Amino acid sequence: MKLRALHDKVLVHNMEKGERRTAGGLILRDDDGRDEGVRPRWAQVFSVGSEVHSVKPGDWVLLEHGKWTRTLEVTESGETVKLWGTTEEYVLLVADEKPVEFKSRF
Image 1: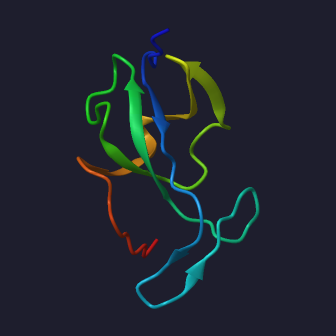
Image 2: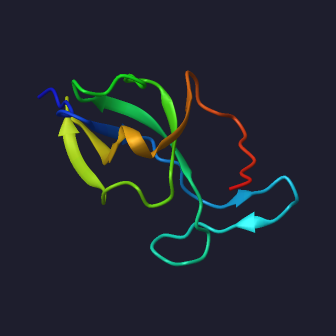
């Protein structure tokens, strides 16, 4: 089965999870549905719709906090993949490789 996003949608996977440390040493907790730790997250683009022009599959994108859907687990080629949906308008930054360390000032 080949999954693909439609129209202006962006599907992402490999969503960043866990605590982060700011440049000043503050620990940003993983919010997981709570008010603490509200911050943007890095994810890798899995698929883009035909109306999306600024990102492509394989890119790493920084998404505005909370601007993604709940997790959708699908099995593709015998492997379970966790996907989240968003749109191009919520992409803050794009990188062609996984950011090793990101100090958020948001």
